[in-house]
Length: 313
Image (tube, rainbow, N blue to C red; front, side, top):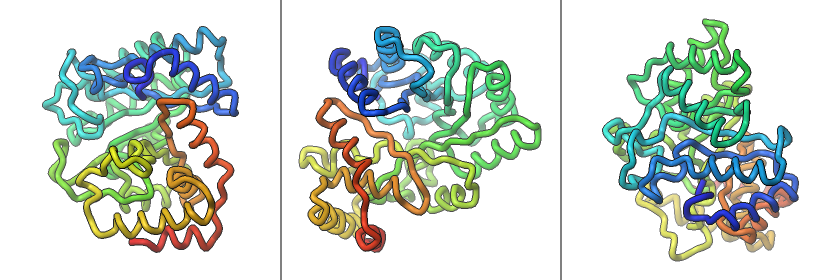
């Protein structure tokens, strides 16, 4: 996410090289990363990935996912995470024109002819759903996009778009990307985007939807809460200020002590091996951080440890 902005090119390349060396094959980005750090319109992350691909001769063996819809329409001051953007912030939104033009710009920055996975980054209640479905379907039909996904949408809007696509015989969203971690964020707090709560966080409603639709894949962004599990200088935000947080932190640290793993590794293992399999997206600003996350792949929690983690409320 921060490649090309906060994380410089040399460090970014080293992280990517080690990731591929370790067997990594999936990289996630967006056309607006990371405007909030620079006050730009974003695109730095995609551009860096394009330079890395060309310099390393990377081809189709690496799957790249990107997103459109949350890119500022003009250079702006940093405003925070994409999930909290409001229409008044002046973002491109998602419509047929944006889908055509933004996807082409992403392909150019990344240096690819085909986007393996393309997400609608944010959803607004008044989005032109039929137009969106048809425009995404056209990209799949012409071979410039493989799979379609959605991030930061209410569950009802996912179902509306997927139903419209199915009715028209068009491809629909197959991958969902939301914020999810072991600690539970309150979803009922009003946000800048909606008085109904936090739209970008996995809720019981969304988990129930994924459970009922086994063909959907769920990807979790920011699973390590920006370092808050292991760093005192990274405090949790107000969404975690409830009684369940200390109970879960206690269980997490107990399991970490039992396994000899770090809290971060336990969180990642818990996500990967749950009843609903979840693909965690991890960011890294150093090779050492990446190594810690990679080690979580080999951490297998016992039935008892998982039960302890699940039971904490």
